[in-house]
Image (cartoon, rainbow over all chains, first blue to last red; front, side):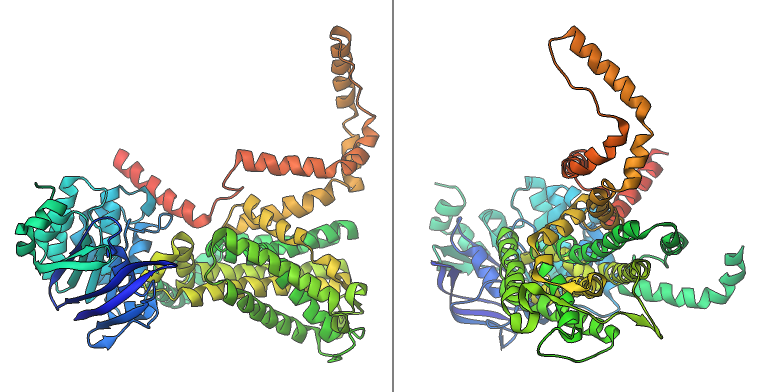
Length: 234
Length: 397
């Protein structure tokens, strides 16, 4: 469904990702783990078109998307939950959600809103509240709900567990599973490697801009080097 | 009563409007409040009660309110800090002047004034887009500096392109706006004209704010990257914000030009940009009432402080003078201070006019200290918070 080939991207003089290949098949949860500055977020930003790929190719559903504008990419069915949630703090929760459906003109936006608030009941109670007044976990739910409002085929999740309590992290990850069951494909970027490997079908380890390891979630979770570097075991 | 009689007749229309509203983005404002219409009628009706000096002040307040409403789109809604707003005001004024004035060496189109207004608004929008294109990647402070430069470029260009603009001698004998055979020449009619323009701009911008476009602007203001990630074509909406704001300013310029009947570069200084921005901030960003209140304070107050009526009014407070002077004398007697006493009340107006900018500055500082979000916060925000309060009331009960 999504294919990156020898993708190179970066900011100004810095090359953050140095030629990575990865693919995501329909219905999968694929995770990209790695430490700070490994290039995880850059990869997502390149896929969604917010930064330009310097070289290499990005293909989505058989179509090259590396020269498209971000709004055209969203229209093709890729939507993202940005790092740090990126909610519109001074707009209400329901306005945030409707902005997720900005490109849609069909009649089912209302029923999708109901679906999202069913997935995140906490949001339903707070629809008219300014989004900036939500707690961190609720903001993460809002960011995910907003991305779902676009009815994405592929959902890009950038560090959904960041800054959340362990219980909330559990909730978020079980929601990730539910979202997949409802038919979306997910590319998940995480620093919380143990949770990410548990939920993922396949995983890639990114180190200083190159992919150093890949395999199924279970394989990597038992891999010695991964256990040492990312799971905090000796 | 009348409403009850008419309601059935309008019911289907209202139902269709409500459905259309629900279809778009949910909560759009209802039809105009009767108080708004009442206010509009009142504004026009006060005209015969004031002399030309006062009407001139009212005209300027209306003009700056128009500009402020336009800038509000750019700064308040889309969050793009524009310090060169005067450029578009100048574009509007110069469009009318170059096409309409016989002094302009190149073009003698002899177009009807109203056509010139339409052309000016179009040129304004075009100038907005032309400024918008190069500054698209810029944000915050950087955007402010570049727009600041743009404002100066237009003024200096007007000064130096004397083939077209007659340089610092300016353009005059502009075409007058006319209705039928009667051409508008007096301050009162210009005031009515500028009030109509302000209402037009208010109507268009407030409808835009509550539409899909307004929602996109607010998303860009809150976080441009994320807005892009949501599938908004940020380029398009940013250019739209610049174009909308600029055409409002150009409309203001097109009305201002025949009013002073002299279009020259010295009218389009940085101070105009700063005044417009300041009145938007003083009034409360994103709020319409705020812009009008801001225009009244920023443009009205300095004028008002030097009117003879103000001096006459202050002269009535002679009794206050003796009270204060007694206090001052008392203080001087008890302490070693040597304070001077107040001048006679007749001179207060004169003194006030002399020091009006100090008083004015003090007023601005006071407003910002007492109400940091401006006189009126944004209306949309207050709607959201009001709903919250309703809910917490329910919970409490």
